[in-house]
Length: 297
Image (cartoon, rainbow, N blue to C red):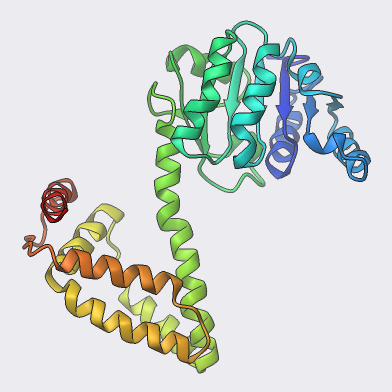
């Protein structure tokens, strides 16, 4: 399928460029156009125009000019601008145009952004990019949610875009990504907190080797169930240990930001007076934990 004249980008940072380059390489994207707010910047406008044109796209002077007549609009701005971008451009969309919101936003933000798009006769698609956008561009694993997901998926497939649809409720794809990020980005933050101190203490290799030896090989559901059982059984003792960890970090001039949160969770879970049987399925465990937390409140 030729996409000539039918694909527009709102935002042209790393994600926009990566997607445009791989679409172009696949021979599907002649005539694409893009608008980025930086085009309006007196100092940076020329550089953004060159970035867009060097990628083989037409630089549009306004969001209106970019989206008018487009069949697919790919919105890749910063997360705090996603709803504003949708509100500003929606009234210029062609009837039935697909608005692919690929920004990393809370589900509530996606629902706000969907309002003006759907009201204008477009179709809003909640897209969650689930891996680094470079180098795979439009072929990066993505999740999506939209009204009438089957028909939207078919239209996107013709354009070479194949996100995996996870439902019709706007925000569902984003919810999966946001909650996954609690773990992924949380581990990144824990890594900084742990290894800044480990390097300063001269024990980084030993700590890393100990962590390697502790790897269980369990999947995330089984590991989470195990963690919940350990926390409810030993949370109070572990909170006390983590207070000593916080002291250790401070001794090496590392702020215990993540550790402070760990203390709070260990203590709260330990105070539930809840016994979880090892091997209990995660969903059953969480139901018991939620009941206990409700009673504690």
